[in-house]
Amino acid sequence: MMDDSEIKGRVGGASWSVEDIDYDSIDASLIHDNTELFYLLAAASFVEITSDLYTKNLIEFYHGNPEIENWLANFWEHEEVQHGTALKRYVQAVWPEFDWERAYRGFFEEYGRACTMEALAENHALEMVARCVVETGTSSFYRTLSDATAEPVLKQITANISSDEVRHYKHFYRYFLDYKDRDRPGRVAILRQLWKRSTDVKAEDAYIAFKHVFLVRNPGEPFTEEAYNEFRASFRRIGRTAFPYEMAVKMILKPLDLSPPLGRVVQPAVETTARFLFSI
Image (cartoon, rainbow, N blue to C red):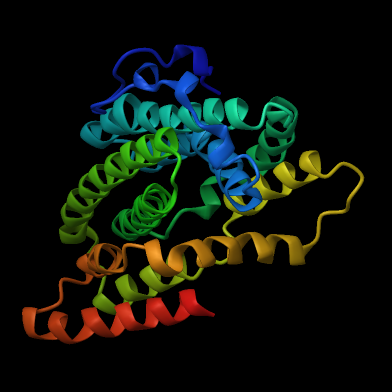
């Protein structure tokens, strides 16, 4: 695991640094009592700061492609870990009573066993599709939090992260196009992968992260599936008005390379479905 003390100055291709964030100016009164945001931010910090584990799997999977290996190792990983560091410092500043380090140790031990090569897609092109889905989800997640929060420092951090994730999406999409010509996945296979990753309601990393945040936040209280479902529902409540539906749907549909006429029909239909799902 990369130590967060290594995050200094600009990393990768990011236009910002953790050192740019004025944590002393956080208005904790605007957010400390917001339990939903606490869980969302703490769990996200665990996943992001552990990106080096997943990066190693991706580098092995794309071994032999020096461009992708270099970008993953020297840009993507460093930027993702910086996201985790920025969120960690925010959580520790707003909720100093939460033992972040203890909860993270539990997460790292369990997630390290689950983060395996077997979780990757069947070929290089489809794994890039999966990466596009993940970057769509993270960029939309942080954009939602940035638009929904009234706390200025959190707004700045999440806006920065969201911009990074959009840029990461563009890299993965370009790599997808390269591998699409080699692996020749059909549109049905691409659609299946988009659906699989988009509907993965129990993503291993988020599930394990929330579990260990919950266990330390609530000592002596057993972790339950109901608690995790409530955690997921909390983001849906926030996203009903703040989620960037149009942006997310355009990103998720792009690998399908729909014709303009078909895209004009599918785009609003998928947006409507997304809005309905957030309203449940």
